[in-house]
Amino acid sequence: MTKGNIRKTVLSLSNETFKHYLLLRYVNDSADPKWKRLSFVSTELIGPEVWIQLHNYARADVESQGGRLIGYELVDEKLVRHDSINSDAWPANWMWVIQKRDN
View 1: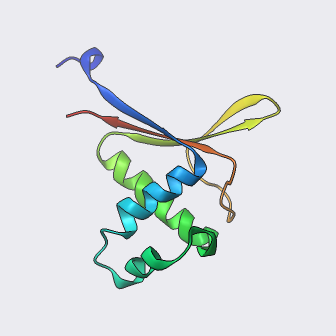
View 2: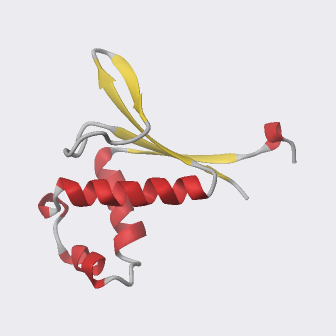
């Protein structure tokens, strides 16, 4: 297959939907009791450092499969792209895009 024929799946998620994706993908199926306990906690009670750690797992996972995880936010009526989270705070107003290569 030539490079121009590679098919990709693109998922666009709101901030809250992305958090639920992180919980379903990396917490609910985890064998680690530390992560499993988060299954029983309200999303509002989970700290930003945990969300960022889950985001980093997701980004590494998607990139290992040839995909990309990108955050977007609207700043002064312009769409700004972020390839990573560069602070200790969870970016509450971002939209998330997961791009995966189809096999």
